[in-house]
Length: 477
Image: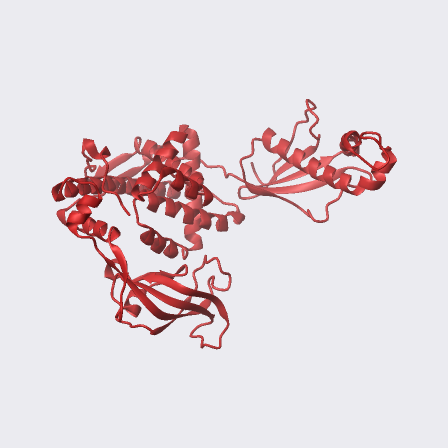
């Protein structure tokens, strides 16, 4: 439908829902404007209905229930009645229009001039609502897509590295006395965030976090580190070799999506005063074997290899999915509503956390990656949003469904990876609003798997996971 196209809603009188004339217009990319007109007689009918209900239920001094005079009710409740009727008319007319025109609405509707809008004393009542809707998507033939499966080897070195990570996860964190910081240390410092570039101590303090921890990464993580939701690209190189009382001053640009507006995309100076270091002491191999419930060291290595094979197969699958998504983005022209960007950044944050949880990442690793993701660009948020609508359209076309058992199965797997109870993990995910994101992640993966059946796949052989890979893998702390 073009921006000038107009649709008139049909009237039905099969119930007591308000009857309204509607003009439905395109008013921008994936945006509709709904102009409603409710006749004077219809407004009067709704007011009479409301007074009738009130008259039956009202209890006023000196009158039995349902016996208060109409004039008294009008004198006492006229203002609130008109306000209630206004809201009822708007709600009923909007809901009816959405249902009749099968609109897939995004977010909350915007009632124009909502603060000043009132029922007229006489004449028709008109109001306008703007809504964002799911954009129209024209999908290409899936057989036109071509992807290349990457190599994903699982080496002996990778097995040993993973066992080393397990030993650290089951190890114990110990405070280091008279320390000199080194890679892998958890450094505690009192953090102040000052406004401005290279700010001195007299500058405005926009945030203060006593006892903030940061993990000192080495070259394998690019020396990046985060503190209080802010990624510092060279944190590792800055803080290695420091002692108690050291003050580190870091002048930088705040993340573009930080929750603190005074930090968000603003020049700031971080002032970190180091006061403590905690260092992980890995568990001994014999204790590790016993802790994870394996028969011996050889069995541990066998199970770790299976776990890495599963992970490698998942990485191959994700690589193919990304190629599919990239090609669909290239082939599909799609304009988006302007108001969705900020909401999408938060969705991306939740989505990334979900992917990391499902990939078996430890909490400290998740924290690092999520802090870095806060700095994602507006361009990336728009890209993710376009990809979401494209995959959503494909899921509907392919009739992809996700069962509650599938969702619970993924939550159970996450609980196992965290060595936690299913009920506890499910409740925590529900509190963070992540179960819907989990549903969408499963639906997206199933959709891309189905598209992959029609696409051309070249490259490496798929990683084969042993048949008994369903056996319990080594638990993760």
